[in-house]
Image (tube, rainbow, N blue to C red):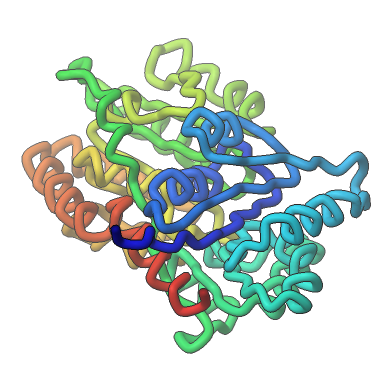
Length: 361
């Protein structure tokens, strides 16, 4: 009888498990890690992705702060580390990384830092300082774009790029046909100031004034949602623009579209956008803001178009072009899908992450 293969322990930490691209990728990694890795997830706040982890029988715990400067979650994290003794900690949030670092130094446990998910430093100085400190405390760094590493001055010696992955099980949610006859445009994202839904709405207003059969979907949640809905009242009443409630899963709504859009403000650029990845996976040509990791993913003129930030006229112009050239739009979508298969499989994302873990265990 052969001895059983040893299992290694990885503790995955984050500052919260709400709905978002980072949290979705954390859950995907925890779900598909190979059996040789025993995994646990610890977070400082719960949310829908906590329920998602529990639904897949992934051990996870939440220790929320009682007030802003409450440090008691750090002691809870230390107790977990002392009791469980992981070989590696993969920190997706800067607060958890900083909290774990002192004890990890004493115990000799390496920390992999995964906080770089965009290609700008945070606008708030407290978050920027926190991320910088967490990167300094880490043994290794995984970002989801080259642009993200560059903005923090991280070299290939200290960090690697692992692009986001796509869970193939999500495709089971698709219907045989989800089109409704109108030329449908979709934008998915958190409705914060950084995601430029305002320029998206402006472009919808510009092209719809010229006639044609248009349908626009604005999908997301956040503090800007009510203001955006109010600003688009005319388009909503004309049934040109909709704000559907998507919950945790947007795939069926994206599948109803002909074009995927992602606009961001000039101050914020994406790392590896989940929304763009999902558009490409469903064979949509992509129109997105030039900058950050977007130009690592979208090939201008082949899989979609890269346009300057803050330019609703540029977005409207590209939408008109695709509206009038449907065959070319489909070819762009097919080219994007081929690129999606190369870059965004969950299997590739997990394999590259585990390969990096193996350097430290």
